[in-house]
Length: 316
Image (tube, rainbow, N blue to C red):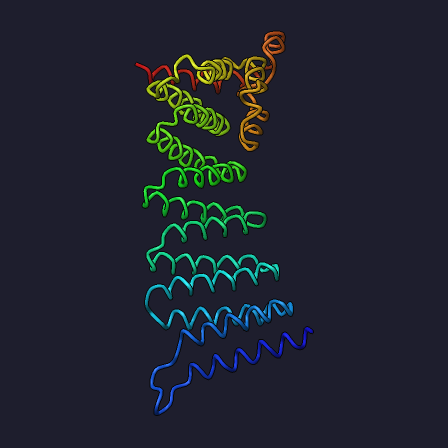
């Protein structure tokens, strides 16, 4: 049965090659028919579990479509490239698989089907995520910008959300703050205000993990202009968190970070909340009060005081 399928595949390849030949009477290759034969060969190889051969047949199909140089053949060419990518995925060759899917997305864009291009990039991101977070971020961001250009803002912001979470997971906090800011501004444009509040919490957690109290505070103050933020449970919790962090009150910080509001955020942000420590000595208030000498020796009190001065200067 396997041998039969392999024979069948080779017959289709032979037919395809015949369609591509030119002669005195036939001066133009029949790319369309050749592509169709290569596609049949690829399926036969795939059924015989000859993945390398199937991949090659899909690439030949893609090339035949591309040589047609007209709509909708670039689209079909993209689909064939994606299929080649899927064969590589089944062969556990993920980086190569993703390269073909990226090429396919370029063909979709040329073909005037950007939505298909963005969805292909999203699929590629999901494929590579388990082995290369950085590449996945790049693909999600590319997909998001394609959707954004098409004014498909809900799709764009969902992909930006994936990128932000993966940046946090890699501890790339500077990039994560920019990504979150972009998410937040889109949610604001589409008037999804409650999600803006959640993005503010995520931003504050990232800023505090960067040790940047001033940026965290600024982030909350800027959010007061978002309808409904002031007085919301998110706002109150953030004010308490910043106050606790500024005063090195580990109990207060811990209380806020362990509250359901923070614990039930996306896993990557919930982890930030649970691992947040206050600056300086990092002891509970009472413990610091009991050993004032130690705090001075280790310079635990100096750092935050300077930060407060700088912050006070900023307010003037």
